[in-house]
Length: 354
Image (cartoon, rainbow, N blue to C red; front, side):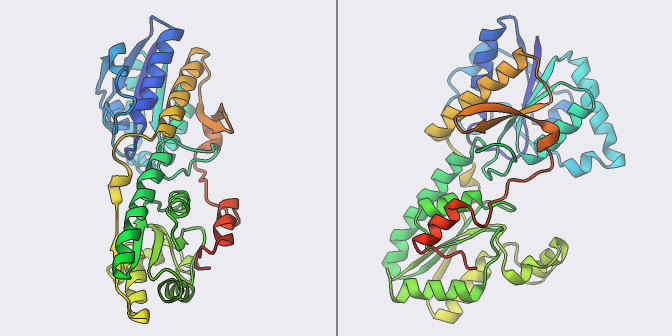
């Protein structure tokens, strides 16, 4: 059996751990297996850039961040444009030139859409869900998510002490453009006073009221966790293009600085904006991620051994299952506004600005 494996899209902790789980498990299933690492994501498949991997390469990488194969973004929208169809044809041709029996892809929503496209074109594909946003439909968690939660939570913990020392309002911008899972989990775990996520548009007056209460009546400072995709109620009713145009006119990309500036002006209190950015993607996977990465990799190997293609691995409770790529592609796992975590946070006094 000849297997190609690649990592695509944004990097995150756990990519190497999944490859380790897959490589070790498939070698036990089929000792004669040949694994070809495709470098640089789908771009590597387009350009036929790959190397045969030795079994030893899958050892010692459980706790290693990043990806030993490298990664890149290959936007799905560009792939399906008429002038770009040659790239899909190149991937199909190179898959066959490499004489692969299956292609294993590790990636997020965009990666899964491309995987579904290739599966529909007749390639044998198995995907594994990766993203710090936890926004892939059909799985309880994606790998990389909990590691990012740990990092963001630690950042919030550290902000508390400096906020308390100076009596400041600290606004921390957390990754998550469409789905607010990372901000929700980190905000609760880090004890944020206010959590703002894309799924629950906020009213700035409510945010100011809560911040003022924290500074003047409670602990003397305020911590606000803001997803990069958060928006106020006025923005929420606008088409995305118009919303982004208005932000561009104000020379802003996200709302974090606007929120901080408004609070500072209305309450006459020092505010600071902190953006951990790609720190949330880097470093070693958390113990939890190492466990589910091993499970997901091993389950992907089982699927390959059973020749179950056109599927993606998913965590359902304590079990690994397989979802059809066609059912997952194009769907987003949003935070339900009435999710039990949202309710729990509200029960203890956390504001969502709504």
